[in-house]
Length: 340
Image 1: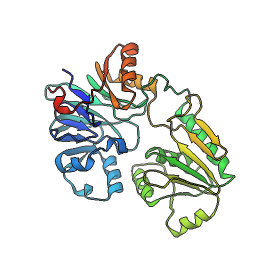
Image 2: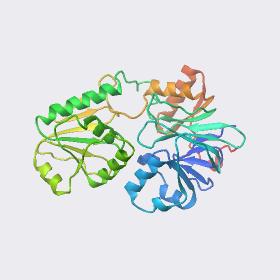
Image 3: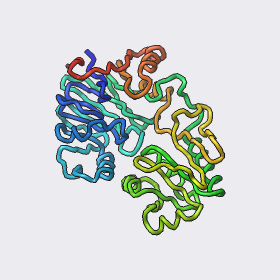
């Protein structure tokens, strides 16, 4: 009997006691794979009812965001990379997924010795991949049309070149998801002759990246006296992420959005106008990389996450291309889902 699935809420079900990135009242253990909003469903509810496992970096990012009681809660338990931890559902191991700081793959060995896991959102290739019999797989780029013919190194170089060119004409405004915005900061740090500025909220998050070895140079708050003076000039790079008001009606300057969604697969840069661009700096594996990841896990059964991405299409491709048993998630509440 299959013992992995994804509930209608998006919570990933492993064994009979563990849920990832969601709340299930009858499951005593929640694993938080990373801090992106589509994986944070019912987190506040989970705090009151479940033991929450995550990486230390994820815990620190959550503290920086919420600044609440997370630091003193004894049911929020950071796990070290690769170490096995006994929990209510079995033996739990977290490995980096390469998606953003703190993001993890999840492996659970159940009481009867079955190894099941969840990829989480992941980049590929990875240094270490979970080895499991049953796998829940991220389907963000589950379409056969989602194959990039350029490398992410090329995307970073094109982004840097674009910023350098546009700084000659005025300010540059960079909008990106969390994780990608810090990646952009690392690309630019030490390579451009212009100050970097951001909101106080984003600065708290950047501080955590710096604590964990992120090579990010000085970033100035837009609310301090120095930051306000920088904004009066026309040569700076401002970063926007979660909670920040996006640039609207800029008198001067260029806006660059970092997102692979809707981008061409043949070129990382789209020019909307001479002041508006998109660059495909993605922290997700593409379609072919996703198939390579599946092979690396050794999974004999794959459940594709049909609540986030192209689960049906990806399951068909895994069966056809790899000969591995695969199906899209059923989206049923866990009480109606096979236990054991």
